[in-house]
Length: 355
Image (tube, rainbow, N blue to C red; front, side, top):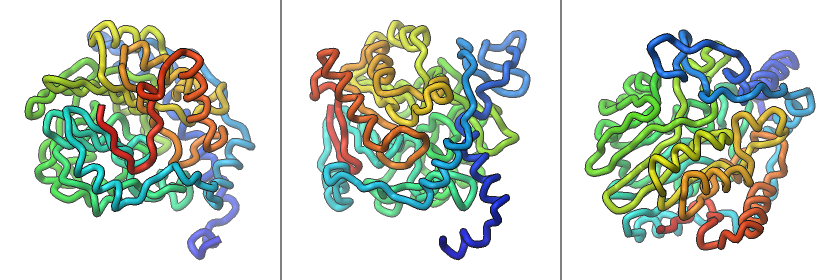
């Protein structure tokens, strides 16, 4: 252990393990009533999923042990999983067209559309935890924080540490000029860190940004930064539309055929969908909040997306499935359903592709 880790007592260690094991469930199991006169996902203490998802199981000791073990180990990285940062920067700079995407890692992307560069779910440092232990990167960002291009806008799906990195938000250059779009309750997180242009949206609300239309949409998930703030802020997915291209960003979500078919019916189609394929085992615990690879493809079909971009894998270990299983299951299910590689992408960290 490092000097920092030696300072932790066994009791502190297990307390941290318990928090990290339970964090994927915070806010998901308690039944709450909607507020009269408000949309059905609003409650007296915050928000809830709607339609309401069925109850789910609780992680056991083995799950907690595996999470802590992962902190002290690193998987072997396939040679084709990443590209070098200099190449990633050069490829991003060369990218053109109405819709291009660069995978920074996990659920963090640079999206170029409508002449603007958007940063999605910024997580760029090592730990995805409020503690000195927890989920940590085993692959560095495709483009590091200090080398990011000028950012026009940030789009946030929810406040979990693997999607919202306080250090990155605090130290992002040019933040006084960056427009930020967040779900309800998250504005102060950014204004307190020097952002002046922050817009909060509820589900189904839209806003314009320099010719882009951004719409906050439902997702099947939850929010929390600690043990006492469950579901106080909203979570969402996003539709990002220019005059000639459209992208759906799922953030984090479980699968709901009703919800995503409604989105497909409303928007008719998307050129691209960024959908999560990892953090799904054990299924009795994770199914309520994370799509598995097969569900991710079904989600993309439900919303009528042309290109499918898998996210939420290959960067940090959150759950029990093998590190490299999600893309294998994703590719197998795509082939089984006649979806070609040109439609069902698997990107390298740092890679840029144009739709």
